[in-house]
Structure formats: structure tokens, C-alpha cells
Image (cartoon, rainbow, N blue to C red; front, side, top):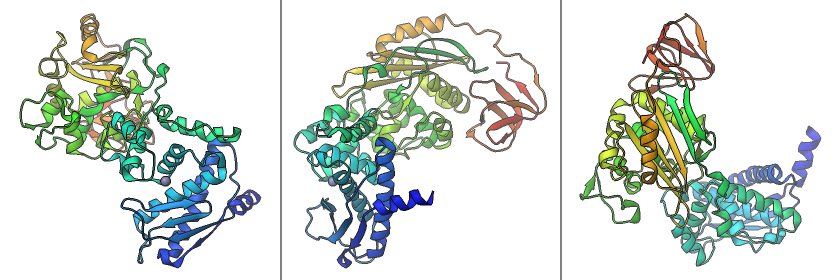
Length: 475
Ligand SMILES: [Zn+2]
């Protein structure tokens, strides 16, 4: 092992930091650490070690234009100086410029591939989330980049927006691999925003709210797809209600507002992106985040939580499971969503079955629907329906038909008492007024993903739930 470590150290450049940069020792340490991280990333994705450069000089420069904090030439990084603290801005700028240095060394043929360089630098420097905080549409991002790709803030925000799309990171990794074979082909905006057609498909899932069992499914219930607006109720459950906000005049606010101000309830029913962006609650799903962690859904910014970017994905089955938990934990929110059928996004869809609903539409860069979602929840069932290439209101009649065919039945678990010490597989959630994950709860209603709802005392033990004495929910 030590031989390998020595070999890697030998391949790393030495750094010299001009005293005018200000925080010499900090900059040097950070440079060494980040160079090691970058070479590990490169090796992991391409299988190749990075050779050179032997030396990188970090120099101070004061005359950058506003918003620009660093610049690179082979073997030389220029940074804005700082008096005596290593600022966050300096740190990000250093990491960004080192990414350029790494690409210059690892893929010299890509020296003129400006989009590849900037996307790689933004992806690896830790600055991505900063640029995503102020949401822009894909269309706006493409318009900006058509005017030129450079290091200014407006271009960086546009590139960050592309990187929030589902296939962007994979495309970037493919571009890294092309460096092996010459690597002269330029990365394009179109390539970064492509959405592989096979990612989308129809799917239906019906879950029993009581037993957690899949009552019916068809299509591709396990296929992960971007989830559109379907998780907005979780944002409200985690952080709401939000403030009453003035209705804005941007495209994000074109959601049927008939008043000057909007409340959380109306924003949820209208699925109003502008409201959620202006409200700007924390990006995570709060107490529901552990649930979404299981599905690999960890939003970095609100725009990702509300589905404005397609990087994060859920399957119809996972979405149904999440709603089963939400329905149990948030009955008043479910009641609110019952109005969606008459005054929300499905108001004109002619849905006749009664229950809480939430829609989601995933659109491509030209605003065509790639997949539409409807989630339906009543006292007995959670239904998730996805249709490729369609907006939700166009297939609501199919939901009507499906739900009418469902009959509450003696739920497919045996009713009766749980034996003491009964164990259920997997980590579970206890739901009372709010969701609780991972602690002893003396008297609770436990909901097991893929398993029954249980009433009784329980404790989470490692990743298992032990229900000490309980009764199965009998619906
Ligand atoms: Zn750059």
C-alpha cells in the first residue's frame, strides 16, 4: 500500500504560492488536498492516472473584472488576493482553477473545449449549488450559452443549470473518457441536456395504505424517472406553511393566480413554481429526508426538490411508498389536496373519483411534456400513474377508471395481534402527528415500507424495527 501512496505523491505537482495571495500556507494545503481529490475522481471515471504538471504556481492578481475570481494558464493559477483569511470565495476559485489545471494535464486535446472545461470546473469545485440557488429555465441557460461560454457569473449559472439535468453528469464522464482517444470532439450544450428517450415509460402502481402491499401494477413501476412537481407536498409538510407572497410576473408565476398575493395552499393546488422559488424554504425534505435518502433523492436546491431540474429521479413504486407515509403523517395536508380535483391542476380534467391528488409534469428544453404524473390517495389506496409524453390532465380519465375498479377488501395481511418482539424487515418510520425516524416511541403507529401499519410501542434497532407489542392496523 505504501508503495502505491508514494507513487501517487510523486505524480502530484508541487505548489508554490506567491505571498501576495495572502494566505499562503492555507492555499498550499488546500491545493494539495484538492489536487488529490481531482486525480482520484479522474482515475475513478477513466481508469487513468494523471501525469503532470510538475509544478503549479499560484499568483495574485487584482484586476479581474467583477464576478471573476481566478484564471488559469498551463502551470499558473491567478487568484484575487486576500488580506489574512482564506475566504470561501478564494477557496472555490482555487478549486475551480485547479480543475482547469487538471484537464490541461489529463486531456490536453480538450484545451479549446470551453464548455467541457467550465462544466468540469463547476462540477468539481463545490460552487455548483451557489449557482443553482437563483433558478433559471433550461431555455434561458441555452440562450445565454449561445452568446458565448466563459467564466462570467451569468455563463456559470447557465452551465450549472445544465448540470442539474438528469444525464449531464453521465455525459460529462463520457467526455472525460473520450480523452483517451484523442478527445478533440467538443462537448455541446445539446449533449449536456439530452434526455435519453428510454428513461421515460408508462407506469401504474396501486399500493394498499394498510398493508403496504402492491395491489396492482403495470408498465414500468420500478423505472426511475424525473418526478416533476409531485414532491411539493413534502416541501410544504417539511417546512410549511410558507408566507403569503406577492404574485410575481415571471414565467414561473404563470399558474392561474387571480389575486395579487398567494398562500401556500393555493400555490400547492396550482403547483406554482414561482411561489416555491420565492418562498425559498430549505432544499431538503426535513423530517422526510431519511425516507428520500433511501431512494437517493437529496435535493441541493429548492428547484430540484420541486422538480424544475431533472437530475433527481424516483420510480412510480417509490413515489407511491413516499405518499403512503405522507398520507399517514399529514392528514390535514391530504385534505387540502382533495381540492386539487375541483380547483387545482386537475380542475378541468373531469376526474370524478374523490381523493387527494397531486400532479407532476416533466418537460424537455422545448417545453414538451416528457412524462406526466398523477398521484391519488384515498383512505385505502395510493395510486401512482405515469404517462410518457403526456400532461396529467390528459390522462386523468384513465385514473378515474382505474380507481373505480379498486375495491377495499379484507386487507391482504392477517388481522390480529402482533407477537411481542416481532421483527419487520428494513428500517421503518413511525408516524404520529409528525414523522419520526430512528428512536424509541412508546406508543405509535408504525408504518413499514412494503409492510403493514402497526399500532404499538416499538424501537428502531440498527436498521430493523422491533415492535414490542402491537396490533396490525385493520383498516
Ligand atoms: Zn473556469
